[in-house]
Length: 290
Figure 1 (cartoon, rainbow, N blue to C red):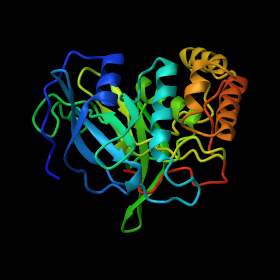
Figure 2: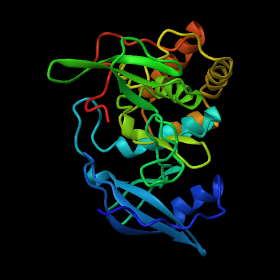
Figure 3: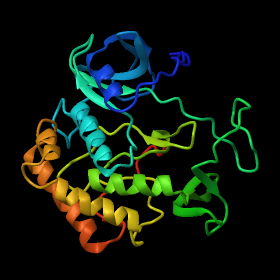
């Protein structure tokens, strides 16, 4: 589809946006091409309030060998619930609701800020741009302000070093991904928004009971968690106790086995106090990486 029409920003935040996404009237404007599952660009409107959103109907999900059929939408909502529990707000408001093509995930549309190239102060449309989050460099070691991920083939027998920014927002997202066991953290899933916020999207491949962590954010692997992250995982450990409101909500979205595995990952982070490292039993970087 062509570039989505921008919906004027509204004053709604928090609960108001969740209510709008849950109860508003969905109008499909087009399909976002290139996704492996059906992704529909929509507006949602209620009582004079309107917002742009993404609607992913369960009926449009492609089967995966390692996830039960028809569960990706619920996993996206579970990722939002955990993001909210951290207090970091890294996932746009996301709900499970009925829509024109049946039950599906509905998520607030985020207009990503333009990113600039190194040494350029503007983004692709000439506006002031956000600094890049990912890059390929020819050096053997990352420069100041960057973290190394892996070497990548770039054609004609040449390799380059894949790096990501040493950015506090990305580091929080790396912790969130470790908690939710994100099997698909690609570069295109990182959305820097105007005002300096960073969002992560596309969280259907999460919460597997087996280790599936695949990400481009390995730069902190093995390093101590920040003091902030330690506080967050300690709080999550308490909020994931049986019978808590968070667990009651998660039980509507993922299985008890997956909730127990979630508790185990949080307990592991609390015990080590460090970012996880690749297990070596599963490809650690998603493909394609963008």
